[in-house]
Image (spheres, rainbow, N blue to C red):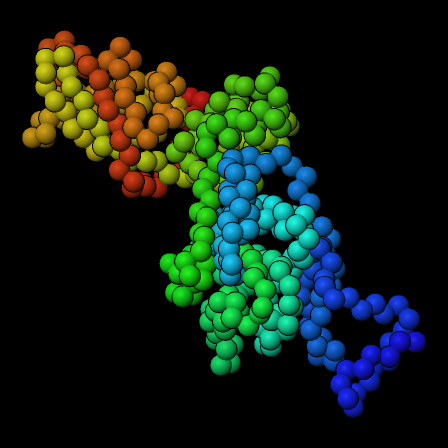
Length: 362
């Protein structure tokens, strides 16, 4: 047996397997609580990352670790963004870097009264990882306790002699306590992860499928310009393509929010110098799009038609050259269109399954 002398009057008996350490080993732990024994840390499986890392994650993590090395106080980091875009991956990457430096990582997934005092007894550098923070620590009172407000003193780091790294991930910053956001003294960094770029999407799908699926991959890249895709969506798309299904066959079946067209401001010029200006809801994914053109005073000029698949729509602003436009002149003057410039108005117009026409299905 082994005897642990807690204080002058208290002794505890343990089995011979008891080991006393002055520091936590550099590995991953979870914070646990038992009403009989109190708080403890339990070893957690390594936070392995088995997939290729896309986007700017490696660069961001390297910058954060460099900053942490220079910090002389606790460093807080917020990873925010929509689901499935890599916030947790960023947290895992940071965790693995901290372990490489010899520091433990502690996963905390719920608020337990008294946890702050326990955590502050951990007198060594470590990373505290709060994944899905706004969900697991909703800032609403449990009795007289507001979890996020209670944690503010921990994030300040005033109760420990060693600096720590605090990392929280969240989907919606509106659910964070007002004293967490816009407070660089407490959380120095706020990394706002966004949807993968078209280049990242092309790279991801090519890695998963191979270049023989280039035509199907191109459809998804075009689709993603107007409908943001996350890595969960891309994984689902890759699965469907591997199953032998084409875009037009599976896109309405996948759990992706896609039932809208985008409202655009359309400006152009006829070959006689007449200027046009219109607001139109356009589907830029099929083989035919049309716009009723008007002068600025509202006078109707005619209808312009073009094939979106023949023009580059991957930018925020799309310019359609005249040789790609068929113009039906309402005045029968034989006029043509020099160009159309299309700019999103950032307004959405709901309608069912409009985006399934990306390959010409009407």
